[in-house]
Amino acid sequence: MSQNVQKVVLAYSGGLDTSVILKWLLNEYDCEVVAFTADIGQGEEVEGLYEKALATGASKAYIEDLREEFVRDYVFFAIKANAIYEGAYLLGTSIARPLIAKRQIEIARHEGADAVSHGATGKGNDQVRFEITYLSLEPSIKIIAPWREWDLRSREALIDYAKENGIPVAATKEKPYSIDRNLFHISFEGGILEDPWFEPQEDMFVLSVSPERAPERPTYLEIDFEHGVPVRLDGKAFSSAQLLDRLNQVGGGNAIGRVDMVENRYVGMKSRGVYETPGGTILHIAHRALESITLDREVMHLKDSLVTKISELVYYGYWFSPEMEVLRKTIEETQVGVTGTVRLKLYKGNCTVVGRKSEKSLYSGDFATFGEEAVYNQRDAEGFIRLNALRLRIRRLLGR
Image (cartoon, rainbow, N blue to C red; front, top):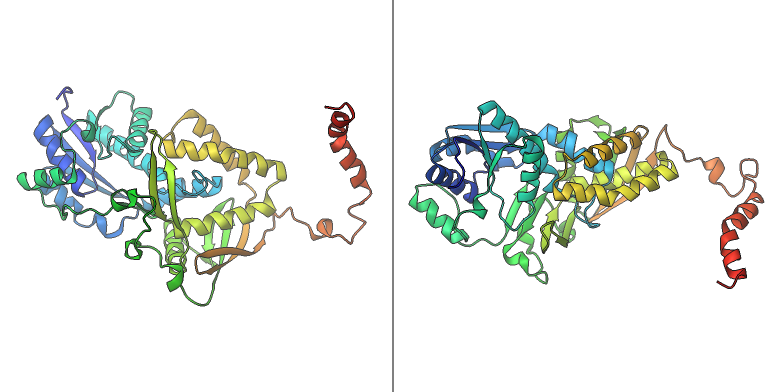
């Protein structure tokens, strides 16, 4: 290979792709490989990975629990920013990549590694997210992207390579779709889902039931926020990861959070994705409701104008860019008074806000009422309207 590599840190999931990549790096680069797995809520997928990585040839394996950091510093920022890509995608995969890549670089420094590697393909977004983060944090790091180098072009070829090299993988040559899971969501892409006319089969879903199978009676929740951060559920305090996990269970049981969309990948093609984000959906709706009574109108509208940009930066992989740093600070400033409680009703796929209250509320029944002249003189509205209509009147009077 063209690069002289001594030690590489591999982002290792233990699935077919990265299991083959680990052995391929050893064979092709004749280098030391350190496997790194970030536990961000994959559940049982992380079980046994330490032993498997060493058995496949890794000199060392890191299995790190990053669930609290993931939810606290990344997921909750997306909630505070109301970040949704193209009106539907809550950024479940996108928001995880900068954390994984950051920790991978930190391990590379600790290990004295001169390269990092990942299992993202050459057609998707993840290669961009990983590598932009690598280069933002460690500009001179060498990057090995096997899918852009090797001649293993199919799942069948990967399985054959695994068998030839004695790699234990629980995979068959039938792959209906690709799955990515963390504490924020589960995504399904590729395979049979590449036909956008194809309706996903019900047995595909993991976190949520269908509306038809949801309870016949609604479930009510109350979520307390402090400065834009959810801290209590039904009056009980939880850690960040615990709260999101509990909302996933409750929301999924009420058919909340399924999305089926065709999105625009950063690399230029359209891609169909199906997502389950029950807890995240509930938090987005609740947070927006609390902002409706605690944010000044112009601050809210300014913040809304930033949603598309922030969502794109997360989706494209620019978490550690200077523009994102400015936007993160801006969002945090808007959240200082976003403190209060939101009550929600979950019923057969619908999440409805049925109450909101806050000691920081800017809503006043006295000012909103139609019946109290002491706080609002309705005659003042005439001048307000005429001044705002002045340019339109002039335009019409001049025949424009």
